[in-house]
Length: 199
Figure 1: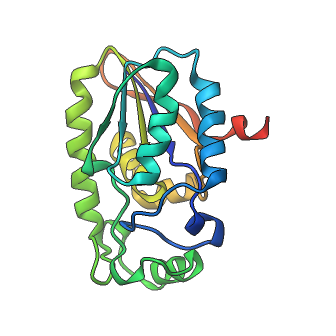
Figure 2: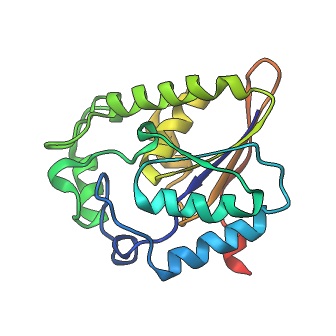
């Protein structure tokens, strides 16, 4: 399998440095432009299936990217961003401070009134189990920054902390590309690559 993991396009909350989590914030004009640039970048690739979270910013990005391929987009709640509870809408700096103040591992962290990281890991495992049937295909996923780190940690067998160190910041519509060999072993080809935004 070849797996593209893509962060959604920009929103007003992204532009102002605020967390979104489960808030359903739509793309802004910059986000739509980013999605179209990504669509142009990938239009020559053979992509068999498109998946997105159920949140509008991911789904709209996926629709734009999928359009040249004449493929439907399957929405899956498992791909939604972490629910930050009462911390949704706050500045990213304050969210990062909250994480830094905790002495527990990310896997044991829960946001006030929101989701436990273990629940996000369970969602990631459910999604990966779902796409195993596509072992000989190319799959593109449009999801969210924090959740994709959880997804990558499940794929690579590493901790979420390691993923945050490896990918400290992902630009909107950045692409991570993973090839799986016949045994299912992953090989990371690209990490948070956003060269299409430089055109």
